[in-house]
Amino acid sequence: MLYLHGLGHFHPENVITNRFLEELDIGSSEEWILERVGIRTRRTSLPLDYIKTTKNQDTREAFEACLYTNAQSGGIAARLAMERASLKPEDVGMVVSGSSAPDYVTPAEAATVAAELGMDVPCFDLNSACSSFGMQLKFLSDMKPETLPPYILVVNPENFTRTIDYSDRRAAPLFGDGSSAAVVSASVPSKMVFEAFFSDSNPLSWDKVRIPRLGHFEQNGSAVQGFAIRKTTESLRKLQEAFPVNSGRFKFVGHQANFGMLKTVCERCGISEKDHWHNVVDYGNTGCSSAPCVLSQNWDRLRPGDHIALIMVGSGLTWVRTMLKILE
Image (cartoon, rainbow, N blue to C red; front, side, top):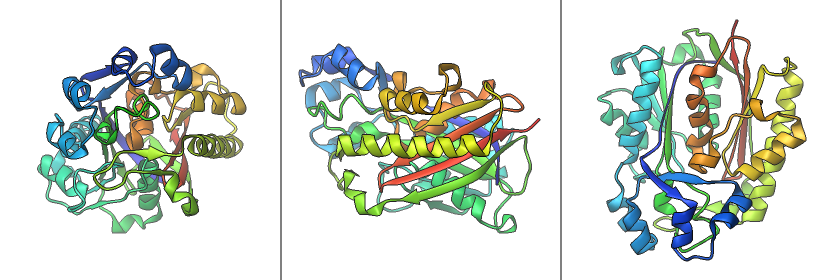
């Protein structure tokens, strides 16, 4: 069990439309993209002119061209999370971070985020690609409360588009940039609590999704799509069985891989459109920040009695599920 005190999110201002991708002349039309993945727009921390002229063929140049570092974008999300929690940086006793595309191999990205926020506290990274947020929460929930500080900041900055080859029509339409942050506690109660954690991995399939060092994102699309649908469906059904609440009080937030994948899961599990919270249509797949960003964007919609099933899948292959309960 882990208490939630605040959530924050950030998406950069540059918008990649389907028309923009069509104009890159990579064999993708607006209609093809929308029909195939259900994504209309996505955000990027890269200048659009840079993408148009280079198609990001050298990821080292993308790092230099990027308008935000992970520390900066993560810091923006973190400030919103702390504001919602009515806390100041000096109230936080630990920073945990994770990213599918960190800025540095060394040091831990949590250190750069903490420095951005002016914090001098213990920091470490816990990464499992797109499921990192769930893995971080589970790890913290498994620790003895007395071993942790009262408030912990969990940050997931994803400037993922730096890893995308914009001459590859299979990858270019899928991804956007976004960062999320959460203030959690194992000892200070709140009216929002994560429970029913479960995580697992299939490491024999680690090579199905990967980003080589200094390379571009690559995946076995059909295998990964099948995995995401199976594990998300299985996880959602488990949570539905464990928490048989009235319709309208049970919400679903999944990893924002693509809208088609999420729609299939909802159909299989009987989740109505109004109970499916998502942002993939407008923001694309933002890696490990995707599900917590959706949750943060719906912060003002959370009501006592709500149960939000949060399910994340990622490279590794990994998956995590948890239930966020809003107490009466």
